[in-house]
Image 1: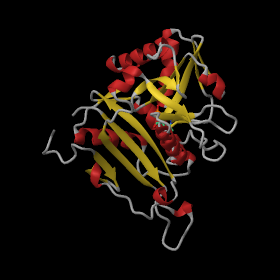
Image 2: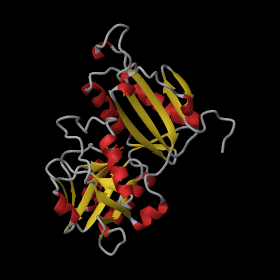
Image 3: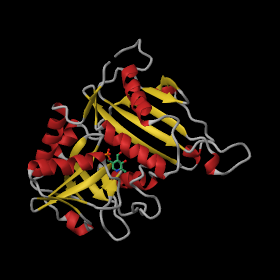
Image 4: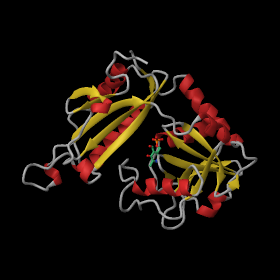
Length: 301
Ligand SMILES: Cc1ncc(COP(=O)(O)O)c(C=O)c1O
């Protein structure tokens, strides 16, 4: 471990300066904290290169605009700041968070239009969503019974947000039921997504992912593109719970680990209990894209 670099455990850009990530602070009066009034994005860095940085910037900037916020810098400066956080940290496997909070209202005001929005960019060490053993054997998951995903009509899940209580409580339910993770349904019993990932299933050789109710994940998009490259049919459409449970294969997608196989759902063992063949092919190609430098923005350390 590098003991001389103060940013070795992460580097944050906040209120115009760089600090070690562990020292970055926001005031408790920031509406981002008090009201979850914020949007964010997380891009991963693999082997010293960002993956799909421009797509993450597109999504973040679009969502900042949709929440009627403004950043203190333009896209080019944001890109430079994200890269600078990695350069300073020296991290070769990392996440870079970009967060825009509403900020504090002007003194004597409660008007969110009068808040000065706050930008935080931070590089932190990569912690995989699933460990090697979980990736090898596949995840054991449930469909949450005690909580549903927040309806898109209330909080739009395509605006990446910090309204995580439904996701978090579903995770607790999964642990209580002896599982490792949970998929959330919407009010009409269709699958949506889970805490930090999009969901897919494979039915008779066709890859399916829900058309609504979840984030437009960058890894989801990559997976749809991988299907096209590999000649695997892929459809984006509503998936009812019973259909999902009867699928041949299930997998999750996230920037925090790529394509994650599921081999047990609601106690049912999928296939022969090992990650399915379509899931495995997609997972391999996902890694190949990284090795080949597809969508890569290399960092000069
Ligand atoms: C709720 C939710 N859904 C899906 C995803 C996956 O999105 P991406 O592939 O862009 O990481 C995330 C990522 O953190 C998430 O928080």
